[in-house]
Length: 522
Image (cartoon, rainbow, N blue to C red; front, top):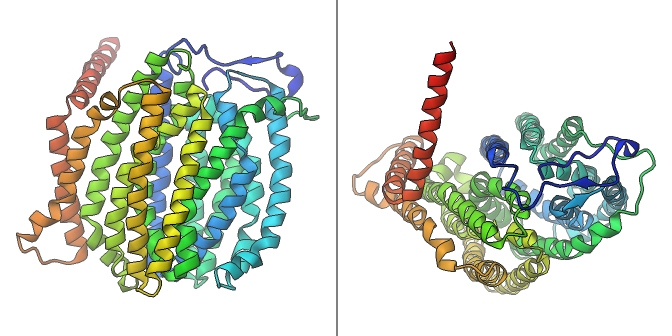
C-alpha cells in the first residue's frame, strides 16, 4: 500500500506504478505502518464511539421492532453491495504493480454494476418483504437501495487510500460521516420519525462518506477510462469475490434467519445484542485488519517474516479485544436496564455474543493473511463452509424455537452462532497457520493467553460484586461493574503479559529522549 501514487489523469502516469518492495519491512521501515495502525484505530474508535452513543440514544427512543426491520432490510442491501464489489478492493490492495488502467477499469465496472444492481434491488424489494411476512419492508428496502450505487462509487478511491496506508484521510471521511449521520438520526427520532430515522441515518452516512472520500483522495478516473486493466484484477478478485459472497452469507445468516423465522422484534433484540460486541471487535481488531492486508502483502515473498508479523498482529488484536469484551459481558445487565423496559432480557444474548466476539478475535486477521499469501481460494472455502453450516444450523434453530418468546429466540440464535464460530475459527486457524503458512499453531496462540485470562476475570466480576450486596441504580451499577472489571483485567494483563510490558518499556526511553532533545534545543 505504501508507495503507490495513482494519477488524477492518465497521461501524467508512467506505464506502471510500482508498489513498495515486498522484501522491505512493512510500510517502509515501520514508522508508516505504526502511523497507519494509529490512524486505523482513530478511524474505528471514533466511528464506533459515535455509533455506540447514537445506538443507545436511538434504542431508548425507538424499540426492537424498528431496529429489527432495518436490520432485515440491511441484510437485503448487503447482498447487493457484496455482488458489486467482486473482490476488487483486495485485488487493488494486494497487487504488486498497479497501473492507471487497473483503477479506471475497476471504477467503470463498479459504477455500472451499482446502477444495474441497485435498480434490481429496488425492484425485488416486494419479494423480500413477502418472504419476511413484513409488507413495510418494501418501502424501507426501496429507500435504502441507493446505498448500492454509493458503494460502487466509493470502492476504488477507498482502496487507493488503504493501499497507500493513508488512514488519516480515511479516518476523516469515516468520522465526519458517522457524526453527521448520527446527529440526523437522533434529531429525526426526537421529531417522531420512527423507523425512518434509522433509514435516514444510513443514507446520510453513505452520502457524506462518499463526498468526503472523493475530497481527500488524490486519484481521479481518466476522462476516457480504459477497461483493459480490469482483466488482471478479475483473475485475483474472482476468488476474493467468491470469498466475499461466502463472508456475506456466513456473517448475515443469523440476522437473515432470525427475521425469516422469528420476526422483527426478536431480530431487533438479537441485532442490538450482536452490535455492541461487534463494535468492540471493530475498534480493537478490525482496525488491525485494515492494515494487515497491505502490510502482510509486502512480506508475501518472505514467509518467515510474514508469520512473525501475523503473530505480532494477533497478539495486539487479542490484547486490545479480549479484555474489553469481558468488561462488556460484566456490565451487560445494567447496560440493558438503562435502555428501557422494551429491551428487557437482552443481556442474555449479549453475554453470549461477547463470547462469539472473543472467538472472532482469532479469525479476523486470517482472511488478510490468506490473501497476502496469495491463497484467496482457501479463504473462500472457509467462508463458504461457515455459510453453509450456518444456514443449516440456523434453519434448524428457527424450526425448533419458533414461538418460545422473542428473548428466547434471540438467545437460541446466539448459542448456535457461538458453537458454529468455535468450529469454523478452529478450522481457519489450522488452514491458515499450519497449512498455508507452515507455522506453529501453539506459537500463534500462546502470546494471547494473558488476554484470555484477563477477559475471563473481567467477565466474572459480577459474581464477586453480587456478594457485596450492592443495591443501586443501573447507572451506578454500570460504573461499578465496568470500572472494577476494567481494573481487574488491566492488572492481570500487566502482571501476566511480558510482551506487553516490553512493548510499553520500549516506548518510554524514546519518549524521554525526545523530551530531553527538545529541552536542549530550546
